[in-house]
Length: 569
Image (tube, rainbow, N blue to C red; front, side, top):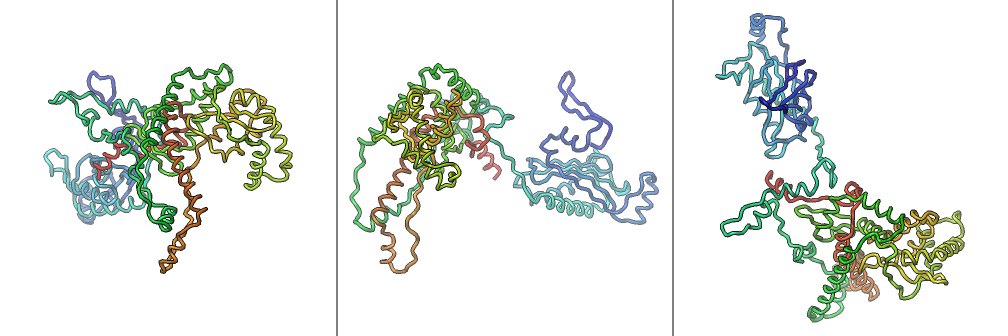
């Protein structure tokens, strides 16, 4: 460190690879980086301490000794590079030079470690580079047989001064801690497959009984996944206790408790059979040739989806296990030993967009029980735009806008029916919508917005842009939005009279029915997310690269890292 304008190159005899290399123009920081690594050099802060006045170098040792004996006071200078609170290692590294000679000083090392013990977590150690200059007459180099350790005059005062200066420096430079985060799939890290292959390690030999245990197959406790996706008790819902709703409480307050009904085994069995049939149909469709449409524009859009796909995220969705809903729009999935938080609306929107392109011209149909008049639906959409401040009289008459939009959609009815299974009859009534995902229907409350988007946001002039904008409009229409979160219609009552409290908690029958409907709708939506959307995503979704960086998919836990945390504690 101290020999400037000199470079070192070290390597083993007969080896072409250099073990150590420094240039003659290296600074101390560069030297630390070359010898001890970039992690140590990244978190160093400078420290300088000067006490008293040292004798000029031109004086002889005899003259310096005579002057020091007369003054008999502490004098030293310190130039140091010390690590801040963001650096941690399992062993203390202290590089100490006294009068340009590398030595050890146990009292000084213990004093510095005592300072860091109050700042760093338990078992974390610092890095220190200390360049200490003392009067030569104050240093005794004959205290160790190999001259590895030295002692010096006024040792306690020097150590105490350095300790105090180090503590002040760290307190002033560590007003905040830096915690480094990373996106889901940083390009500098190895891929999921490589990391999982390395985690699996070499195959273990059979034990005495002739078979491997589950722990040995996993590669250790820290790589053992203790959940089974086929067991419903391993899902998140099994650990959540749903509180009694106010509607249930009001019903119990107004009537006696009803007798328990036996579970409907036939209903549950039929639901399982229906789910199995839908999954089998989906797998069969997946095995069918994709991109069967012969239009060049559709093939180019599908190729763009394939080109932007993130391979590692695709593998995660192919092998994921659904854990449960974290809130009204976030879901938790597990992939091997990692837990991920997923934005359900974004996943649904992308999945529907890709399915529109792959099923182009081959959709099933959802037939409306009563056809919806396009003019009336568009009028509802414009009323909503006016209520939200997105329409004003300067934009034109609403009646004229509705008329023009209806005429446009009716003129494009053959195209919409042939390619997207959206049927409009001659009277301007919407009769069918496409089946994009099996066992899934869109939220028809968004139908006015969808028809308005078809009229305003679709470029009907260019074929490729037309198909892409219609696919985007369908993706927005079929997107799974937030689960229903009904607000409690009652407020806490602090009236000490129990009769008044009971009276306040009993709701009108209309409010009870509305609340029960919202709760049933939220439960149905959660079921659809688990049993329809994520199985379809497992089969068909190709997540784009942007999902790895925009927060759509985030890694929130890793079993191996959790074991490291527990070891540190």
